[in-house]
Amino acid sequence: MPFVDNVTSYGSDKFFETLEPNYLMMAVSIADKVITNEDSAVVDLQNSSKIIETLMFTGKGRNRLAVEMPAVFEHTLQRLQKALEEKAVIEAGPPSKTTKSEIKTRNKIAVCCAYIYICGFYAAPAFTLSFLQANNAIEAVLGVWTSHKASFTSIKERKVSILAITEIFLAAPIAELPPFFGQQANAIMTFLLECASEIEQEKKKENEEEGEEEGEEEGGEGEDEEGEYSEDEDADKGDEAYVQFLQKLANEEIDWTGGEGDLFDEDDEIESAIDDVDELEALKHMIRAVTGQPGAESAFSMEVQQALAQLM
Image 1: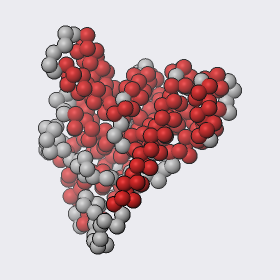
Image 2: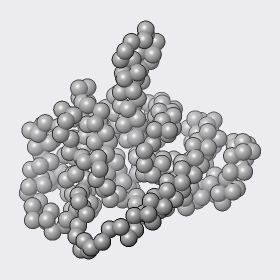
Image 3: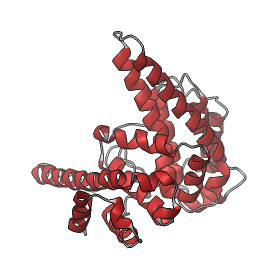
């Protein structure tokens, strides 16, 4: 996963602030070409969303995100809307042997697209919220994302959900947010509480598995884990090779839309800028801010209020 590794290894200041060459523009262009290509395989869209994820998380709070992201946001919304429209047509039509597969593909495309905005909520909440509100797409994005929670396969997806949505509720009082957030506050809070509970369960499971494996592995001290980023090795490649790599991708000199040889190894555990962020503390901070607002209690059911009190 050379791109994701290099965004961090080159230093976020250099990556985001250098205009010649414009690393950020090239990276965004790579993702955008995949999103706008209707023949892109789902795996390519997943990889494209991972690029945007890295840019968002690493560049959180940087003004240049709002400069380079509008086109990607526009094209992502078009792809999301098309996937939902096609899904509706398939569901309304006569069933066939491929119906389930076709619906599943549209769902995956929609989730990949929605994830880009979820990352945007965390990194640039005002910009992302403004874009979605102007395009009347808040309900569609959050509807897609929250309805597919059962398919989340990692702690990270749940963690990102918590961090992203807490940023929205911290951006302004509920009464000043788009009406959707007030109308669906109870459902959204339930979703966040479920994510938090599932994260704790997953962590407990991982700790138990690590405990079972402890002592089984001997030796190997000082050896790099497979796929681990080697700073010295990458440093030898130099800036020039990295820039050429990005330029070739941006200029479509490297084929990245076949769906076979994607740039990301799904088994790699890539470090993220949110690794050290405590999602539970972020959630508690948001709950304190929200529940302290006038009339907040009426937005939540008694069951949710009890769950919030227990969490706190």
